[in-house]
Image (cartoon, rainbow, N blue to C red):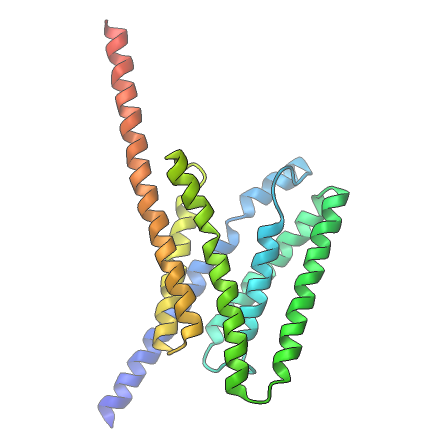
Length: 240
């Protein structure tokens, strides 16, 4: 029995460590829009920036936060905490966006924000009507899984842009790194917690994050080689 208890203790410790690491790395994702909102506040306008990513992110955080509560799943406090923090950040971003947006955009984003709250209310109210806790966890888990996968799928557009332009200008390194580290941490957390609704989407997120990093270093190196060649050509032409 002692080895088994020791093994269980080690797994719990590793699981908690992975979850805490995921919370820390997620902070890098949550603060990444700050430069954008500094510009918006400085220019007193949302310009061509879209408010939709914050609307999608808020709904994802709210549903996944609900999945992490004891009313839906057990031993998922770190899933609850990271998504609670994420929801707070998105609320601030949405409030600032609406404040500085044009009138028509205010109405549209404000309407989508209310839609987020309505959908979340329906998910909470509907799931509480399910008396079987196991079934409730499955239903909310599937919704959370879909929300997470849709969020992690968004970098596919950036990946396509990087491959097409052969430039990493629109793919910030630290954002890609934070995405990979956060996803990998929660993949391990979900694996050790035997939770497929955390493990599967974050496993996909880890692969997408790793793909972004590989592309970043590949095209960054290519770009440096091109600049080096151009520099050598310019030096040769000046010498001639």
